[in-house]
Image (cartoon, rainbow, N blue to C red; front, side, top):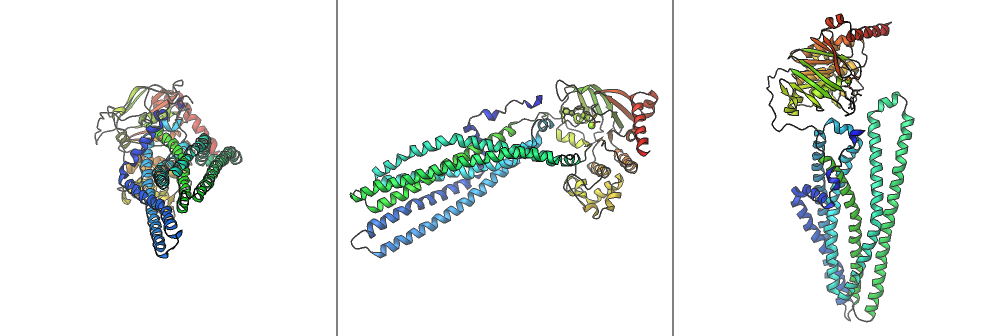
Length: 598
Ligand SMILES: Nc1ncnc2c1ncn2[C@@H]1O[C@H](COP(=O)(O)OP(=O)(O)OP(=O)(O)O)[C@@H](O)[C@H]1O
Ligand SMILES: [Mg+2]
């Protein structure tokens, strides 16, 4: 697709520090919370570092002396216990605070992302995979929160541990302390060697997973088609073809992860053995006391854990950065359609006239769809549009609702160019009843009310009565409280159409556009839909795109479209007398109807 070659979003080229700064902005409102976390971390770390020191005192001062005394050892034991408890409580609260902050941040990012996605134009959704968007909103935001709950926490907690442990070692014996410090380059080297592999594996798994989710999302939406055409087996194979690479990538990621962590453990154990050997000799030569050796062995173990955790969280940083870049790329996408800087306010008693003035439009620059289309609809008129499939009828409506902007010419509503009207105002003025009626999970009443709480039950019933929807609603076991599924599979096409009419009546727009469903409906339902339409067309400007020409037979004016242009126009009798395309279509459709009932 040509339009897919969007220019690369800005943030993908930006350095990591920029991405990190943008992430930190999300944490700003929770500064207090994070300060509390840091305080608790300091308390916890101090308790951890003082434990080996207490044992060292017990060994050197009270155990390995000629007259060991139990009293002070008991006291040290109590102090040890108290410190452990304090550490435990500090750790507990710290974990809770971090989780709370993380969830708040995720919520903020999700709201931002969702609001932004909603503001994007139809064009964006055509050129972007919705499955990928889904991944952005769900897992990417979770991974971003891990930047705060895991990476940032690790930098503070583990960084502080390393500093404290190093300090304690140097204080106890600076020579042994410096010797231990020589381990740092080795630890660094191991993680530097592994990191690119880990990152590569991580990326591979993620991109395969998002392809898999995209496939699932697409199939769930098209389930009916898949079943109708018996494509289940074929789709299952296609699914498996995506599933296997994902599985392989996951296993490979896991293998490298294990290899890395075990190498690290090995180094840790070697260091302990080394310390026991060097330190043991020092004890034998009376260079240090046994308690100091004990403390050193404990510290060297404490020293490894945070470095391990830091490098592990390096992974978290990587993944949160990738996710943040993706989310930023979505957030950085500007909507193609912008609200005017100086919007023209619409009159509340705006009559609802429409003018298409030499409008040309194409989805693809190489393939013009509408060419120089001009027509006007007076307030309160009922206008029909007919034409072969693909003539550009629905496109006309998408332009009127400003889902796309015209390439040339202009569209005016009540004399105002629609580009000078705020989109929210425009959409309040014009209601489009699409070919496909979208239903939401909720009751019939919810679906008529469209989740606006101010619409009363009486208004809903009134609307249902006058559009004729009430007749079938009354027959439902739970009436207005009958639960509907999003696909609306439990309602017929005609019933859905009537429901959409009732919804529109409650909405009370100045301009109503109906893009009629192509589906054949039976004659009785057709009459019901016809009557419902007549009801809602009253007192408003109505444009009906008709597939059943009987729907627009009584229109004030009919336009016939052909290859993106208006080929004929007039009233039904005039067009019939003309004996052109319209008359031809009428003959064909009555022939089809005759055959259907033959
Ligand atoms: N989103 C789109 N992207 C690219 N081309 C499109 C898009 N929507 C429609 N078209 C093309 O524009 C032309 C007009 O389509 P449109 O949907 O306006 O026809 P229509 O008159 O409403 O047809 P129908 O009677 O089948 O509903 C068709 O050739 C179609 O392939
Ligand atoms: Mg159409």
